[in-house]
Amino acid sequence: MPAAMSALDPSAERLLRDLAPQVLGAVCRRFRDFAASEDAVQEALIAAASQWPRDGIPGNPRGWLIQVALRRMTDHVRSEIARRDRESAAVEDVPVVVAPALYSEPGMDPDDTLVLLFMCCHPELSPASAIALTLRAVGGLTTAQIAKAFLVPEATMAQRISRAKQIVKDPAEAFCLPDATERAQRLALVLHVLYLIFNEGYTTSSGTALHRTDLSNEAIRLTRAVYQMLPQDGEVMGLLALMLLTDARRVARTGQRGELIPLDEQDRARWDREAIVEGVALLSKAFAQGSVGEYQLLAAIAAVHDEAPSADATDWPQVLALYGVLKRMTDNPMVTLNHAIATAMVQGPEAGLELLRALDGDERLGGSHRLDAVRAHLCERAGQRDQAISLYRAAAARTTSVPERDYLVMRAARLSEGATA
View 1 (cartoon, rainbow, N blue to C red):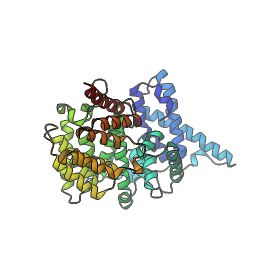
View 2 (tube, rainbow, N blue to C red):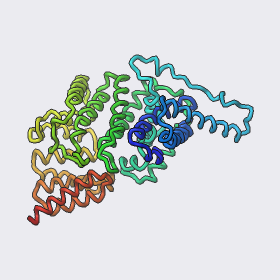
View 3 (cartoon, one colour):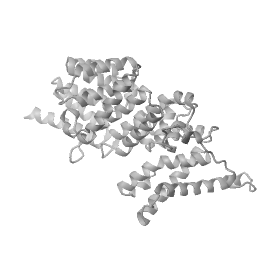
View 4 (cartoon, rainbow, N blue to C red):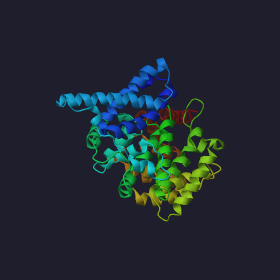
């Protein structure tokens, strides 16, 4: 999102963030030039950030943004025509792409954002580039936020996104949902993208707020749209269930000052029971499909936590068993971290600390605070106070999330006070 949006009040900024991918989709449908369309949409967002505080939000803000972006694109096309000495060509000759399949499929939401989502997961892009591009175009994340999510330098991520834009800037196919075969090929990447967008919204990687509800809500909305399109896919159901079961705890994760409240200290009466019921029902339906995937297992773990009446009543042996299955399916270091926590809860903190040794030197965690934070927690449980204090402070120094940093500093301070008492 443009830096100029920071001058808007929060509700107007959220509105622009929500509308940006829809506007980009509409402009891409008209001109079939991704890179130029994104530039035009960025200019429209800047114009809105400048004019709306003075003139008020228009009655049809989406239409306003589309019209401004289309004017910018028209200017761009005219400039290209002039540059190529094609004065005789008319701007109206730019092909208008109609996608009847998008509107004719039963149960589909005619939202260009969904088409844009699948387009960004282009078969010629590497999975990493497709995810980065989609987070930028559909999720509204900044390049810095995406770089942190991927644990790579910001300059590297900027280059990756730029190359991805060049590949999809002038797609040969119409701007519409791919057919069933191609949808199946792109689906795993689409789901991974949505999962990353949700995670960035649920636990923001940087800034003063723990959550970015606009991102987590958008991830849930888009996942529902994919579910409506593929209602029998177990992993789509699993991902939607995972989001609902996780987001159900969001309100209880922060205190009155926005401070982080860990899972075992949350007021479970504040959890969203309707979301939990819906998530559990989706998960049950997903398991009935017969094939179990990663999102279903993660959702099952979330369900164990959500259905426990208290932290002490959590069925940790079941959580450990589920993480054991998940570890055999993926080598994701975050799964290893959580498996170590579950092991500590069942077999003792020393057993969990031993499992963490496997992550020492893992480049995928380079610069991340997660390993130090988990190790600090387990050291604290093991009575290794000085080591826990040092690790909490090291983790706090690495995170760019203010609520997480404050929580880690507080944990270290409490242990220090206990040592001098």
